[in-house]
Image 1 (cartoon, rainbow, N blue to C red):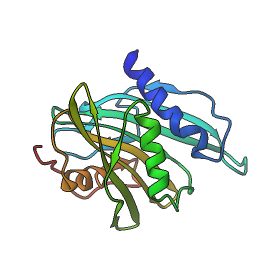
Image 2: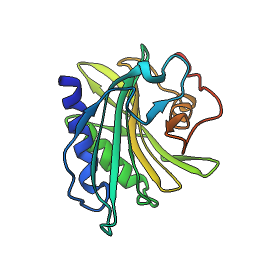
Image 3: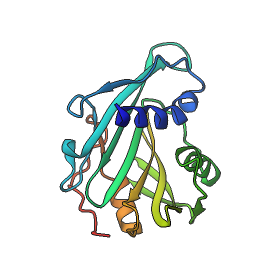
Length: 195
């Protein structure tokens, strides 16, 4: 119940603006197996998904429904949240937008940001900003990201477990191995470095 609530709260930080203030119907929890999202990372897969769900609302021209799928996943070294919206919006997200979303996800923290970076992987474009915050005297190293490809857009965060380092290689490997239905299926299984 608590895990589902965490996903619902995090999702609510993005969903209201995800498709231009759509009338969302409310978060619905699903099983990891039912989720169209997966992380193609060695040792992750569906087993790493701790919570999954979706919301839906009409698209901006009311010609159908737009779905926003979310997962929260982790292994012994890393933790993450990924949301994917079936929409073509968010083509121009830059540093200030990503920083605003990191602030929403970690609203009770004082965040120190790194530099905006991007990756192009086939038709997909990824932007991310590393950041860190200290909680209970332990440094947490994270990155906020967004990606766009075809008619899809994603947003989320990726963190090393508290006190562990987070390399640029780990961030790039994570965000380029998000799989959604058949629309974005990485050719290889990514291997995250040990922090």
